[in-house]
Image (cartoon, rainbow, N blue to C red):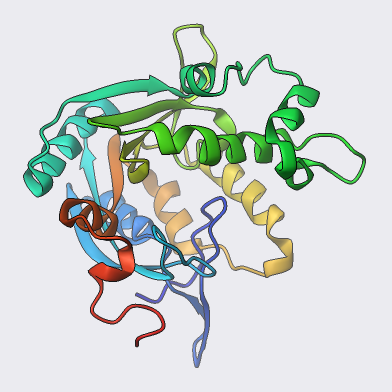
Length: 279
């Protein structure tokens, strides 16, 4: 479980440990070791393993949880989506009926704005009492924070009602390690999907970025944002990506969340024998 470098997932903070061999990090997801195996030629790989994220606790969050993650060489995100939905049906018996909703379409439907054309004053007005969270020191709007808040507060609770909701075509600033493509209006978007049920995000899938130079650039940007955290980059992972990641698609499933919903439980803590606070 100990990694020589940190996962640089936007908005996620890893646990840092001191060992006789130096700093090590608990995985926020098993993405790095699994992709190293794919790059080494092991083909399709999967794991169901503990993952760890600092400062996360709530009905849908825990600092320690189980992540089901797998990669399919030669597949794209749409092929992988079908497999994830089939698995969810096996686990829940809720079928595979689903809607596919683009990020822009979701904002139009549930917030009444187009995230590409909306003005910053309107964004801040929509946030109401939370506007200060997205207001920079000079009084301007941090649009990325504003969109994240609106997605969390106004859109996600309305997704997955009576069927699976698949959110796709994310903006490029949240592409993470997904490749980019053009949407129907020729805007660049991330080849990424998230699956929701009853307002809960359960899966995050990518058509994986295989351009090692582009990936290194994205990781550098994210690392720079975290300069105060003094995190080490995962040089072995980046070396494997430089060696070459085959065309593939990958997905991470919050397994405890699926269990929570399937059994009608109130929180992910109820899926764990010894949740945080009861260790």
